[in-house]
Amino acid sequence: MIMNKVFAIMVYIGVPVSVTGALLHWPSVLMFAIYCLTIIALASFMGRATESLAIISGPRIGGLLNATFGNAVELIISLFSLQAGLHQVVLASLTGSVLGNLLLVAGMSFLVGGIKYKRQKFNVYDARHNSGLLIFAIFIAFVIPEIFSMNLSDRDTVSLSVGISIILIVLYLFALFFKLVTHRGIYQDREVQQQEEHEEPEWSRGKSIIVLALATIAVAYVSENLVHTFESVAESFGWSEMFIGIIIVAIVGNAAEHASAILMAYKNKMDIAVEIAFGSTLQVSMFVVPVLVLASLFFEKAMPLVFSVPELVSMIAAVMLTIILANDGETNWFEGATMLAAYIIMGIGFYLL
Image (cartoon, rainbow, N blue to C red; front, top):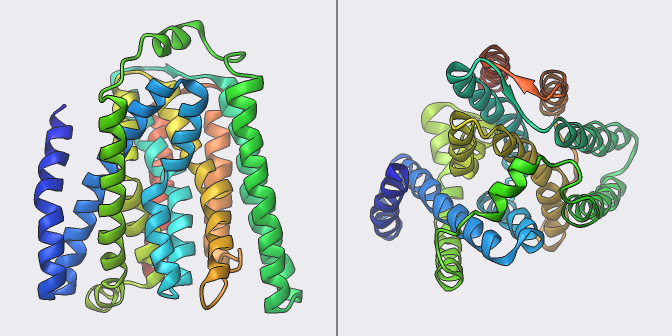
């Protein structure tokens, strides 16, 4: 509740200040910080509105809403980056989302929860199901374009990327259908099902829709201005576009979701914490990435699904480490510390690039 009040204050102050600063052309570095904090606060409102709608609409439609709006902030930022021709920032932010969700969010959740509880358990069947999808998305769908593009023209590389993107979206929709319809509850604990049945929405349907609409419009406006500060910020701090995308944009786009996962772990609700970390990663890799590839066809230059070697190797390492540590359905603080250490090592590497 305290964090909700803090985010509300940040929105009420941040949005007017963002508009004023943009109109008066305040320094880019100052506006970069204001935009980032405002987006984090707005993302919190979007998350709460989506969660309320999901509870009101039922599990099936709720799952679809969560899938659609779970990474809406990052999708909006990436679309404006695409429009500005910042393909490297877009791919870097998507890489950062994968690394952030698997290593930073899951790592912090395991660490914080593990300090309070010696051992924490979560649904091992869900973890293994998500692991298979992660291997498909990162090892196959992301590696194939990288390897094949070495012997393909730019046009053929884009064609390959479009084909893979369509397959990813279709498989992701199948995965939602599998979890929410044909196999809903089969691998779920009765205790979790009972908790879901008695869950009450924070806001009414009407209020949730209004908040979601207004927050989305505000995020779109602030994100468009945020993108225009990247170049100045990179020059001021000596950061590369890759570092801004992988660390800064990825954390800003998912900050509210990150906080939710850590809070759930602290309350020993590990099924929810793990689902946020894994589910968000799958949304990014199997839905957001392909949608952006397809959306780029409508801009001046198409964005192929080709990551740099450091990005690709980092994502593969993150997936392997996460699967090895999480596939037993149990976790502790030391596993969390290990994942955080991996994230910091990668962060240092990308900072120095």
